[in-house]
Length: 154
Image 1 (tube, one colour):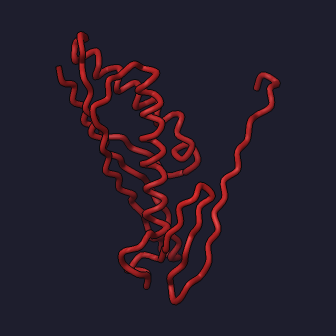
Image 2 (cartoon, one colour):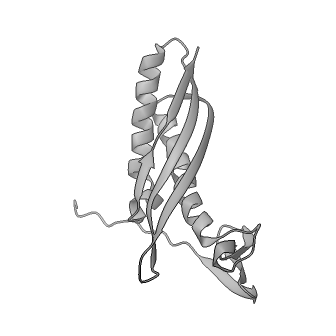
């Protein structure tokens, strides 16, 4: 480190138990919602689960960092959509761990006056930057795998 002090930020959530395997979470940024264990773990259907939140945290953080990188790489973004899947393993002692999170971003970009191949290469660099600078991707020990489909249109 160059002697400069690191900056810190703090984020808060508050959870409370409602009934059975159902809770309520209030996030520091305002949203609140019910959550539960997954149905296969005696939870409720139709509400957020910690597993969903974990995968969503990686997916949303990488998307936000891609938007940041796309601006810096001067990409003309038309659309971004990304499906993500977290794979967990249940060990013999019943402990569980996510082994990886795979993301399938579908990115549409306008080429403008540039060659589509040049724009696509820049988009791939922007996606690598998004993964590199994603707080969530950097904070989990699961492997983060990106499998993008990039379409550049004239």
